[in-house]
Length: 247
Image (cartoon, rainbow, N blue to C red):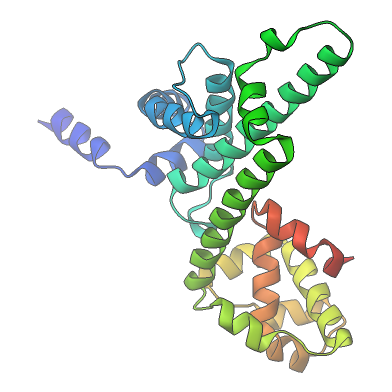
């Protein structure tokens, strides 16, 4: 009876709860999750490759590794569901793989080592649209996915894109100070964990770390939170967008 009750509770665990146990060291459960979600991995990889993916394909192996990476990096407090997060990671890694294979294929053809008839499936996909068009199309989709994830994360802090537009510092000095405070916050694990847990900016603690007045921190609270969220999350495109601002 107790064994049946244990199994029932085990089966009722959400995927995110199982991932938390995996991150604590449950390797057996990790193998179980990966095995259960192989169809999801294959479907996600197929959506990028535009063809049916078998478990023996190299692209599937890339997806498998990416899914494991997503499990390791996932944080319930910092994003949406594990599947949404892992879908983005898998697509990024597969696209990177296809780009690399395509570059290698073109180099081999230029050197006369292969012929057009020997083009890989990845090369065919890219050539159908042209390399630039293919990259652009997939980048746009990943960028949209990333923005939707960030929007969902902002909502957990009772923030929206409109809030960021309305509360962004108007003067360059104020903006630099706010960004400086966000960078210091993002680099302090204790404070950033505190922010994610309580869904508010630890103003008092942050004030002790930075050479910025409490008034400035409070006035730019929403902006500081948003920048810190980007810096501490796996947002490749948003981080790229911030590069010029952060330097």
